[in-house]
Image 1 (cartoon, rainbow, N blue to C red):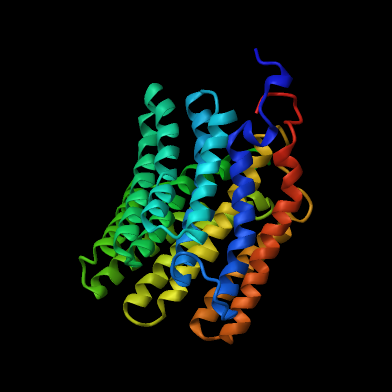
Image 2 (cartoon, rainbow, N blue to C red; image 1 turned 90 degrees about the vertical axis):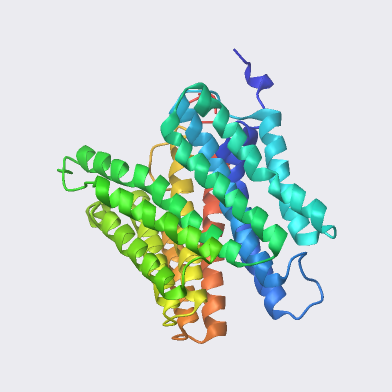
Length: 387
């Protein structure tokens, strides 16, 4: 048994600690930096073209950090194994940080590509070892999605074609559907039962699960390969959006509206459905691509990542699932950020006002999270247990 003095620093005792902090800080920095590159006219620019950098780093910095924190933490619960911690976790985090540096400042494209591309395989390997050792084969689809995300990144680096980033965005939406499909109905059902309410109406249908995930995968493959005519791809996107929306509505999120930690998960999943529907409308030239991309990025990813981090950080530090003060406001602000950015993309709001207002709400949401959760993520568990 390890003594307290032999333990690593608190942020490196469990993957969610350092990576959730990094996710929040990257969210705080990425949007102001993007606005600076976009609007300042300064000669200071990132290593990639500014728009490509923005799209790539919302995935590479923000999403990938959240994935690492959640997946490597969840694997411990799935397999009953010890977490990645100490020097191994620190090395993984430094690899993620180095990737952000080369994407911002790198002058050697090949070296930058190799450094940036090393992170996801390292996460997948660390997650796969306990999964394979304990034969938790039902977890392999998540590793498969991680591999596809990495392949999209490889293809973007090699080709410079931004449709690979769009495919990675859609694939991240699919990952939200997979993870959200596991936790949202189960957590909602359990909460309702603890409140003494009936929860039989929160149901999942096998055929709808298959239809939702299959149509989402087809949408990703079509976006990546450009193998379908745009009207046909649009129909696939509409099917994926309709099935994802029906799937989420059948979980009756309004029944858990009194619990923000649950309601935010339902809203995040609905954002995915909306973004797929908007991708379909974009295929028929009814909205611009900026609309669905920001519904998926600012809306679905921002909402779901903030909601999951808020819940996981409480549960894994021995705290009751009761939100710290101000985090309900953070949830409202992140939803508003997505709405404002989507509305600005439609032209219903002045563009400059829309992106500034959306950016302000986004930064305020993650600033609130960082303020309230920094002590939680950097102090030992309150129940005295390891982790």
